[in-house]
Amino acid sequence: MRWLKRKLEAGAVSAITQFFFEAETFLRFRDLCAKEGITAPIVPGILPIQSWEGVKRFAQRCGTKVPRGWTRGSRSPPATGARSFWP
Image (tube, rainbow, N blue to C red):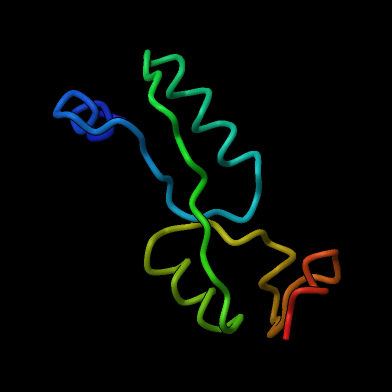
């Protein structure tokens, strides 16, 4: 939060978050920003998916939490509406 505030004080007018899997992650961050007095627009980050293995590697590198049910030995996304977008 400290870095975001410093960037905004230095002239940034908005922010883009790291990618995430669950909307609650973004909503908690947005609410924390509001508590800290940050009023700049905060855009949810997205990640174009080319492969599930690539997504898991990228999430691990940047510290994004992959929902538990999505990773247990699975090599494909969960059986939800998101599956309709999977090649």
